[in-house]
Amino acid sequence: MIYESARAKINLTLDVIAKRTDGFHEVEMVMQTVDLCDYLTMTERDDEQIAVTTNAAFVPTDERNLAYKAALLLREATGVRKGALIDIDKRIPVAAGLAGGSADAAAALRGLNRLWNTRLSHDELAEIGARIGSDVPFCIYGGTAIARGRGEKIERLPSAPCYFVVLVKPAISVSTADIYGALRLDRIVEHPSARKMTEALSTRDLDRVVLAAGNVLEPITTEIHPEVARIKEQLLRMGAVFAQMSGSGPTVFGLTTREQKAKRIAMEFKTWIKEVYLCRTC
Ligand SMILES: C[C@](O)(CO)[C@H](O)COP(=O)(O)OP(=O)(O)OC[C@H]1O[C@@H](n2ccc(N)nc2=O)[C@H](O)[C@@H]1O
Ligand SMILES: Nc1ncnc2c1ncn2[C@@H]1O[C@H](COP(=O)(O)OP(=O)(O)OP(=O)(O)O)[C@@H](O)[C@H]1O
Image (cartoon, rainbow, N blue to C red; front, side, top):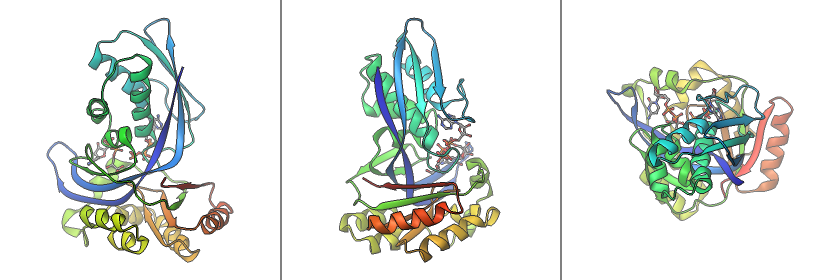
């Protein structure tokens, strides 16, 4: 039996550089894992079947599940003829902009690579992961990294400082494809710079991190769902040093360096929003 944790991610920066002809966008983003995790348990089966079970009501357990896809692709890439039961204890909110499904796919690739003794490197697993989703390669490595291309080209960075993170997910669903689809490149007012964020993180100065941050998808999601802006304002009013939407949303994260403050913010939010999580970047 193999255990793997699947960490959620936040985007410290998210810039869109160009629209491609394959339906994707060229991006540059600084990604950071947080310690809010799904937990995967993988067991070998006597037959060659893949089966997924999960405690989450609305997550598919067939080939649509990204962990299931990961198992099929790992088998195809290695020629291994083994089966597995993958149980996913889901804690990361679904369709939240936190890459929950991608994190599960990455954890399944890492875990099954051990269970089936297929001995692929993380780089090889990331290549397989890119066929599942743009965020999967980053989730193979975790930590802090710049993602380029459509998100699959990863440049790993030194670990970011330890910040406390309050994740607030309003009860709305956002389609990543719709948000990218609504983006007009000529209307982007300010492009965040991954290089500036890398420098800011290396100084460990949160004020500099705040200046370098930015997510060009935030105005798009906010226009459709104004509650994203309200949550952001509220996080700042309650004392978060910084607040920003993650990925294509709708989750907004607030950062602080002080645990007590983060706890207080999370507790206050819980009185009016169900999905609120306190976690850390380390
Ligand atoms: C918003 C982010 O989460 C930021 O980390 C990612 O860019 C999205 O990553 P993801 O959910 O793994 O996305 P995918 O499953 O690969 O793509 C979903 C859809 O989003 C759009 N998409 C995604 C990534 C990208 N670089 N350009 C895009 O235009 C495409 O319409 C695509 O069909
Ligand atoms: N293991 C999984 N966990 C969660 N959702 C999954 C999983 N496998 C497939 N899905 C499907 O993927 C959809 C998106 O879920 P996910 O939680 O990955 O979104 P997200 O956090 O917005 O991702 P991203 O930040 O990468 O755009 C869900 O509606 C769900 O049906």
